[in-house]
Image (tube, rainbow, N blue to C red; front, side, top):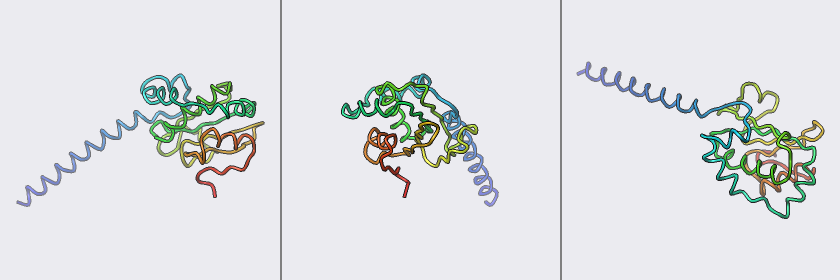
Length: 173
């Protein structure tokens, strides 16, 4: 009897170990890290979620002129997780704002991080705790950060950051 119990437990551990290995391999395929462009986001496997959200996002017409006016010379470093629902919601919207605001795509760098917020060293020095994190710069000086969720709307939060109005992201005290 003891023999059957030991064999059963051994088989159970072996079976569970195999399943875990498969899951890790599947997840590692999804965790692209490094610089990613809009053209890559438009292609599979990302295009499936990116295109529909990008096309659906409507820039608030009342804010469009302000975005165009204040976005001059602003650069953005966007840290996203291609596995993250918040990033999947906000990066298409940010890129639509960039396009509609006539902002050069050269002024935005998108960095995909893994679950540990690592991206081949590209994240070093930026203190990324949550994604998405959009860091806004003007004249090489950080103006502020949008982190994970808007306080109002993405556009209104961005305008507060780039115009120097008081703004605290969701996790700031």
